[in-house]
Length: 203
Image (cartoon, rainbow, N blue to C red; front, top):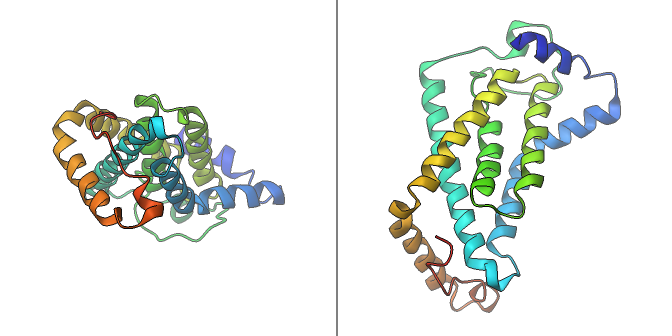
């Protein structure tokens, strides 16, 4: 079933040039979209919600670190060959011959999506749709199976729950990060206005 679904999606590759370019763009743009979105959250122009958004950004970073760390452990103890190693597939992007399960891209994008959902952020649904599209794109371009993407989504879901559940325990770390940021930027007018004035608001 895993390969069957992969084959159904990947077989579309190479047939529609516009769709190919779109999927390649989605899958290759992930790091840049993540950086831009995190900056957008941190430097939101909405003063009333700024600290809340900054808390969300920090929780997203924690979730990503936890999810990617757990995935590194999975890769260290379990190797599953990528589709293009085992089968003749339509591979649209280059990739190393490392373990396929779990997808790092999926861990990253779904970590953001789940954190936004659990924080009830206004961007939760658009980002969730984007995360799903990224997951599909990884299958489409021939570098991951559906199980890799689903595994990444579930791993990130668990990581998100842990981070949000124990957010009170993380509060001292968050305060240190806010204090460091405020000290570094208090002499930079542009950045100083984005400091957190009420550090307990977002918790």
